[in-house]
Image (cartoon, rainbow, N blue to C red; front, side, top):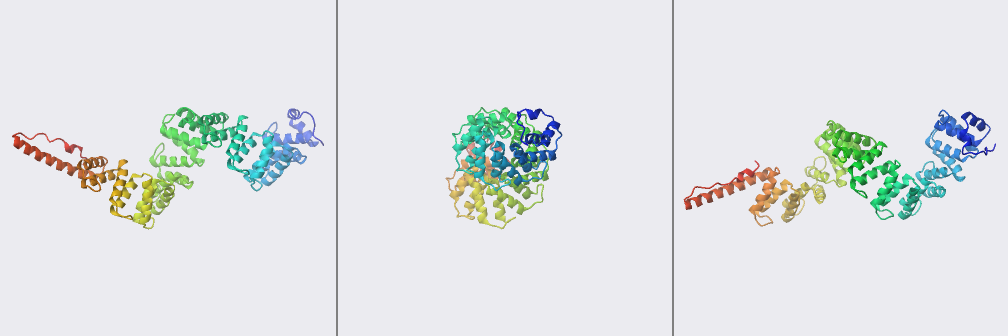
Length: 505
């Protein structure tokens, strides 16, 4: 039976489900397709996936392109029928070859992702183009992505921007977001934060969570807009409520540090947890720190280790470092030097200077790893290059003593200076030593005293001890000179000052 040729835009929609069933039983494919839709979504009929599949199949077998596409969707998603991506592709192909826009995009997506067929970007692009030529905005956006990444076509960022713009100007929020990213990063267009903000805002206003997150970031950083932490929080909150893990994490940071919102550590933890449970490595790390330090939550080293571990396994270098610290100190886990070294190495290889420096002692002492002075030197050099003051000082000791390197006190002095510039007490004390003894510098008691005093006020006991000796000598000299002067002039000794008041014992 041929399809009923009456006005299909409204005629079938006005019919009751029973009336549709009468036509469907007579072989009307449009009625069959409509029934499939009603049963699938529970529109004017109780939701029933089995019936939906049955009616879609009848219509599809008669060549109804909408039913063919929808049946493909059911097979791809496993709705009302066992999931079968291959069957989905079969039905999408039938509809796509008849010009169904939705099916053309669905088929392109299958080739793009390798769903039900072998992944083939060129074929995906072919079907995206067919759908795009009929005005499908998702397809236009996806063509942009093919050009952006060079999938199925030579990479061409300018072409990507053309396609993103085409879909974005027609209001497709996914393309608006992608276009904003291009303007933000200067991909295919000149970098323009104002344009980025414009397109992020358009997508964000349509509820695109990633765009909302990125718009919040622009307000936080003041890129393309005047810096406004409150606005940033507003957009983070919108995205976070939509379940965007990055926004949840950033909102947590805002509550933790009181940026754009009243400081609230407990609220911060709440948002960290939401993001962490979705697998956001940064949130897992921050949550681990909260449990380790008892910030916004009761201190719990075991839970800290749990979250550090989840983040570290995703490659987060700071979590790897903290996990090393936990194993080194026995925080939340049994002390294990070997495990500590393993995690420090992972963090060190990603450039964390604290981890690089911590490895020095392990390799020097052969704890948790085979003793290896060359390795200790290697990691000390890496950390020192990243301006870790402890490593600079330690490397200075190597050159001073000739450990693993040729003895070079001039080089040692240079390294001690670098560490001292960061107010590292042992390095300040070393500079005091060098000036006091005239090593690689002209002897200068005033400079020596200056550096000893700086080191002492920062808790260096050796500097405090030397400084006390220096001041005693100064006191004795002053006393002697005062007595001699007084005897010569027949006067009483004068006040000797308060040199000892500055010495921290």
